[in-house]
Image 1 (cartoon, rainbow, N blue to C red):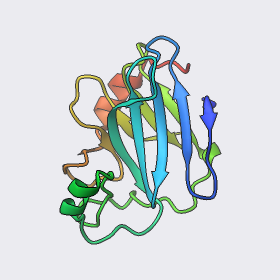
Image 2 (image 1 turned 90 degrees about the horizontal axis):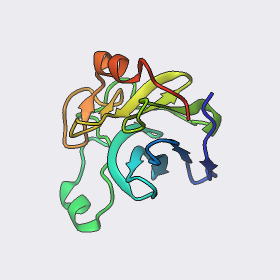
Image 3 (image 1 turned 180 degrees about the vertical axis):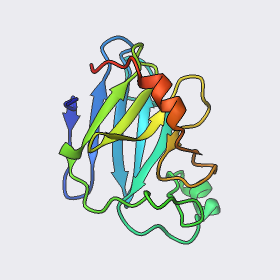
Image 4 (image 1 turned 45 degrees about the vertical axis):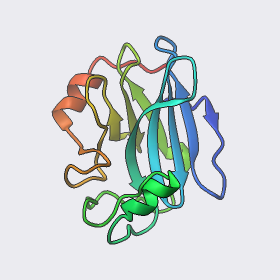
Amino acid sequence: MDIPTANQSDDRGLFLSWRHPVSLRTAILEEKDGMVWLYLSEPETTQPARDCPAFVTTTPPDSVDWEHVKKSGEPPGISKDVASVRALIGHPAPDEFSSVWSADGESVGLRYRGDIISMIVAGHQRGHSKALDHSSPLGEPFDEPLSASTFTTAQQP
């Protein structure tokens, strides 16, 4: 199992990170207000370069207030109109999550109980998530063949 390099999870939500020894990128799992995102950093920093919705911990709202998102700068949540049946994970525990990396550390997948549920893949504009039922401004639905080809020779840091 891939042990996080940082676990700062508390009663306000999840916050885990994993660093790849080759790319020096950090994968960050962060929960805010019931929405959980996977981020992939620039090399040698924790500054996010890419993101992907991972899941929600509460029932998704009917829709996203995009005007509020633009004004506030806060990341949007998954709404019912794009949520898949796998979007909701109630009461997640930090030890249920791990990361899987491509050999070069340029792509990362988030595992929940051993199953990859979201991923950020090099060369793909947006992340892929099992929480999404179809394409949206948040990302793409999960792509099993892409996951298999990206992480087949994957290494744990």
